[in-house]
Amino acid sequence: MQEGLVAWIVLEILQQWIVLDVPLAAMPDVDEPVHLVPHCAEWASEARRELTRIASALRLSTADVEHIGSTAVPGLAAKPVIDLMIGAREYPPVSSLESTLSWLGYEALGEAGVPGRAYFRLRGVSSFNLHLVRKGGERWRNNIALRDYLRRNPAARLQYAQAKIAALSSDASTLLSYSAAKAAVIAALLEQALAPDGGG
Image (tube, rainbow, N blue to C red):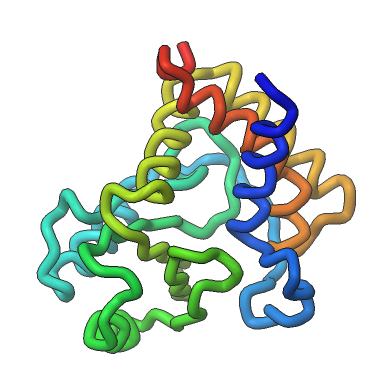
């Protein structure tokens, strides 16, 4: 693979958390402490319940909502925060959608450094990150491809788990620094997931 393409993928992953011309200090509301816990089998059912609640409130089909991220990958250690994704027909989202999510308890944090993604957060007994993106768009496809690749590939899961541990061991103990520390590994895994053979 050409060096230029590798650099582009790494930059795309980094931009999921950091706008390169905006200092990290400019996004203090997004940053928060990070820790990992062993995978919890209850995450899947918690995600289903929350996705059902969101889809009902927003009058969405269940095909428009997904459980993504590490909590959606059995056997993978993760932050105890469940990542959910809404596939919107329109982007940016209409104000009524944001109002409904606020009524459901979600805090709106704008794009939070990720063009094309509206980020919402709910913290409580169960905690959720909600990523609203264009349905069928690149962010939608990449999140699903990476999740499915990690689900079916034990070696990829191990590689990602090791990257998470290494990030925390390097003192990347808050969300933005933790995400940046493992961005190159995510880029490599996403490249494998998007390979013509589906990553093997």
